[in-house]
Image 1 (cartoon, rainbow, N blue to C red):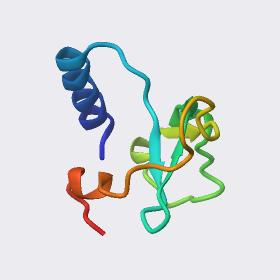
Image 2 (spheres, rainbow, N blue to C red):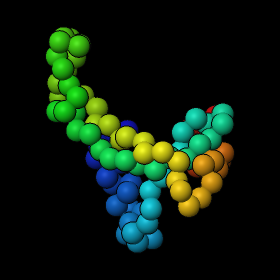
Image 3 (cartoon, helix red, strand yellow):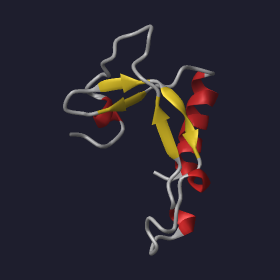
Image 4 (cartoon, rainbow, N blue to C red):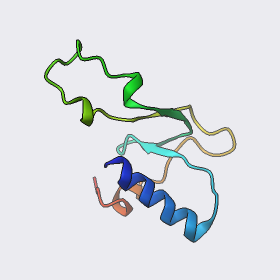
Length: 88
């Protein structure tokens, strides 16, 4: 997923449903939910000495997990991957 894809998808949900909490689902075989601690731009993490052949213009933006949500289950629904088009 590219940054423009993520922004577009989030904008569609915002327009349709309004402002909502955002959680990250990971580990499809044992689905867990995480809060999002923040976003780290590529300029803060890219080091050409680590990967001299890498394209600096294609370095990732990192979404950083912030731990399980306090007010709900730490488990994510297992069908989320099917809904996202990446069935497991």
